Amino acid sequence: MAIEQAIFRRAELLLGDEAMNRISEKRVIIFGVGGVGSWCAESLVRSGIRQLTIVDSDRVCITNINRQLMATTKTVGQVKVDALKERLLSINPQAEITALQQIFTAETAESFKLDGYDYIIDAIDSLKDKTLLILMATQTQAKFFSSMGAALKLDPTRIKTAEFWKVQGDPLARALRKRFKRDGQYPKRKFQCVYSDELLENKGHNATCGTEHCMCPKAKNGPGDPNLLNHEWCSSKAQINGTLAHITAIFGFMLAGLVVQDIVNG
Image (tube, rainbow, N blue to C red; front, top):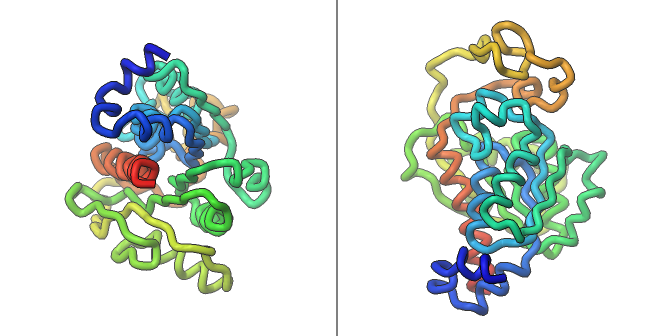
């Protein structure tokens, strides 16, 4: 364990042995490891989390490079969770990283056994799947934290946290609340969200992704590999919005911070 003691010496100086031991014992699962979830995963591992499950079905697209931690010109086409797992193990080789190339849906939800985790983190884009995860996660004993929309934002000072029903100015939170009311199903308990009330407009266009190296159907010369289409973010997005790394990273770091703070204060 000498290598871990060295890696986390600065964290131990701040938090103490007892808190670091608690952090290392917690089991965390992150749904969605794109612009928000990937940075959250890195921060958690650098903070001493050893047991982490990462869930995402996509492969790295060249258009992910501007904001997703594991996305580089060398990882385009790789399974996102596999590329991220390699990165995380290079930080702490003794961490237990479970990489699941899956989607959280009504059909797969039970397979994730949410009751087995201490913390559940939601960084899902899909409204339908996000709604279901919120409903199911808040029925468990795990602490649950959720990211609202991180696209169409520029000002880092407007990123904040709030209890879900008190989030203001975020279209995703508004759509989720509307769906809960429509279906007559509500989260079983309160939970904290990371969000920003800033909302800009796209100034560019997304008729194509502008590259011949992308694996998505919007690539200007067509998709690079038809076998990858079912795992590409670009192929399933109804609308693609502009996003920046400093915003998605702050969202992810704040989610990780909520987890670490809860463990330390608990």
